[in-house]
Image (cartoon, helix red, strand yellow):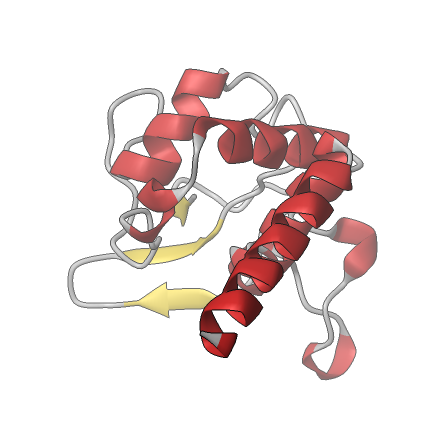
Length: 146
């Protein structure tokens, strides 16, 4: 019985916290915490430290597999090299189905099947957070993946 009460209390506390956050704060929690987008999409500086002045502008780290060769793409709101022109539906399709707006598939290293568990509200908050980040132009080439 005590475990049940503790579980309900924890659930209510986390629900209240999530509701108290602004959409951008919640999106930041999702992008930087749960989804860990920066691990693949943020360039590294000296010693492999994240270059936060270019956060989410595309990672130079490369995944070279027998079936694909990719780098983390620019997911800032940069119009030329980022996702500024992607609609909410485009981002949802990429994040949940692994498909770019033009229909080409993302590399399998993108864990899009995991992201299907997020609600429409969480996807919207994630997009708001991505669109609130400073634009950074990084051209990773045609082999960049989301």
